[in-house]
Image (tube, rainbow, N blue to C red):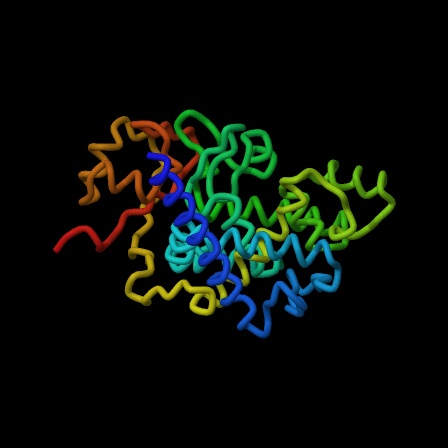
Length: 296
């Protein structure tokens, strides 16, 4: 038994060393990204990343290695991005928010309608109070945090306000995690005006570096070992929008009148949180109904 355990430990040790060589082989063979003599020129939303700083090199290196090795999740976000980014990108552009912020959604939720232990929900991970402040409906029947277009617009409103406050998109991104008041307080305490000079909680300290790492890997996926054929990427199914201005007492029956079933209705309208939809006087909703993708 002891001999077996010794052999097992040796094999695991060799495997770890080999994995390390493979990782650093990919990185060091890439003239743009080398953990030794780091010289990758990067920016976030047009703002330079000071990769000449020793701690910045190590923090970015950590997130690159973490996401390169988190193979399942990184593969899935690359596949999902083909479906989600075409919806997010034009909304960011409409509000004047740099395109790089789509990677913020990646690190927040892996581009799914996630639920955090604290109660944040959706692709952009809004808490109920913040969602309502930004104009989203959050109730037992309707939760627009699960509505990709509306939650993206709400995220844009937050980010534009944060940019006006800080004068920096990088600090605006950090505040999405640490809060505007929290980041402002730390800047005043530490007498600095730059994200990369701030000492923050571990989560907020990693936040922008996680965005940078996913941006680099997702934009250059084959270079980092993620070779995914185009036909394997997820895609948007064509839909039509049905305007509803009166109460629907049974969404399953409503789905049938639209030529789909309850499951498909909920997949395409995850913001519908109940089996019915009560519509107040003067209110209306747009429900998406797929026009193809579910029949031979």
